[in-house]
Image (cartoon, rainbow, N blue to C red):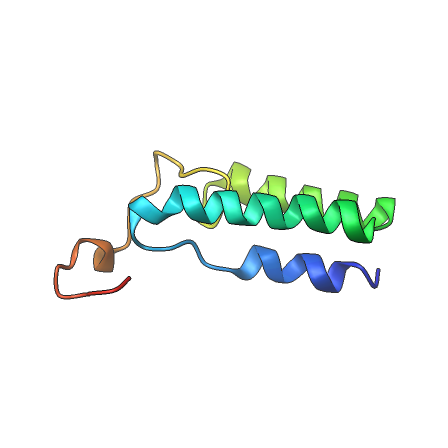
Length: 87
């Protein structure tokens, strides 16, 4: 399970608050995962554990899924604050 040390931090990277950056974030994360899987070729067990964790996070709609934004989950309160600049 040595190869999971490079995959699990991907699940902890927060999604940007600005909705305009969600597409860029999801494309970056998708290309990172694709390049990691092609270059490092993790074992089958590690890949299945990571995909299961990714599926559970995205299926539960907690708001951390980088593939898409769940329609049921609301934006954080700070996303509507005009005083926050540069996020």
